[in-house]
Length: 540
Image (cartoon, rainbow, N blue to C red; front, side):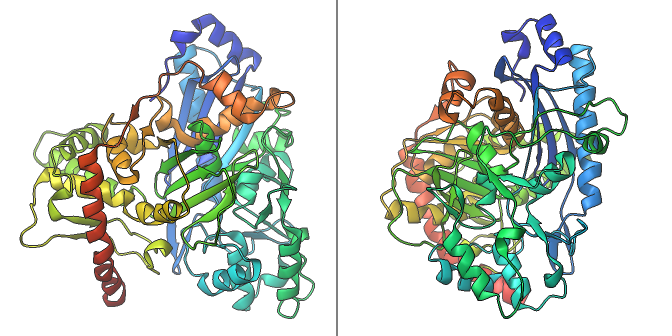
């Protein structure tokens, strides 16, 4: 869904902005798509053009990964697609932008040697092999260290005596890596950095006491390792983060059309850009991002009283404290079911576009019973720590007396996307955290009033979905790039509420009591049925 640029800016004004570089470009490397999004600096809410490239992770030697060559071929394809869209929409060639920014899936493990060479294949957030390291570090630091965090991967490599450990000289995330190659700067936005190592809320830098504890912990196993020397510099939203180099311009656009020298904002993770894309950076607001993974971010008014395994303590791109519930499995299994119906339509001789099938099945879910008729759907393609699963086993479960209708099947699949998330959100309920409104974004919210309604029932809170929701983090990082020029005098929350979202009518759905009760019944069965999941992991 693209906002109608012509509604707010005359065509010639748009063309002039593109020619003169009064635009901001955001690029996000998601789990299944690399997206580019161009916005007008004079009207950051308006999306002028988009580009995209589909890609997929690989499961190699029991490790979820992406090849770095696929990173660059995908980035070039997404950028070329954006340039094509600009030409077709506005009849102008973009060669310069006012600002740029890069975002990507958070966490994982990208260790480099002194020559800048990757030492082992990229280990993504989806890997759950770091249990011993995460448990030991959580106890050492007194804060939850999730399995996917970079420090858990590094320490697990130390515990396993991996041969590459002595050669590690730099550690970063996927967004940090791409930014480094495009600008030469080894930096990271604070919202992404906190997924590498705990950050001090006061200094907005790595927790120095925790760094010292880690160095002492690995002194015997990894002599000479100094964590502060390995991590990227932390920057807050709005801080200058370098400029596009000539080499970086060639990497992104081999045709030579893109000019170097474009300012960059700090690279961020998809969680931070999701918060920006949903205007959820103020206390008592939160957002849900649904894609290959699904996660909820809630900006805190006060510190939590105790450590929760289900909650990560992270930050907004401005450095404010956030509780995060991250689930490794989101909408991929749902998409697989939809694809089966796409193929059925083709086989029946009446082919339908995937978007049409999605919308049809989503609307059918509204006809399902509030508890999905006793059906259960588990979307676990990979391990899911919150559910206690070391590996994934997607399952669809029903009993002889459950109501096996298309509406119930599809409602169960949609509920399944939110199941593990709801388990994790229970920790915030226990802490007494209050939420005025949750904002949602991601492709599954494109069909109006369906996934949004079910999420409101699952969280028992109002859920808002903006028109730009399907553009997601690519638009969010474009907005952060546009914020560079306003940052010296304007707080990020003020910029979003006064410049980006001002006057927008954001449809909000309040929780329906029947949906709340129905999802609660579904979740009780879901929780009990995890024993079936665990048995499947052992048996299959």
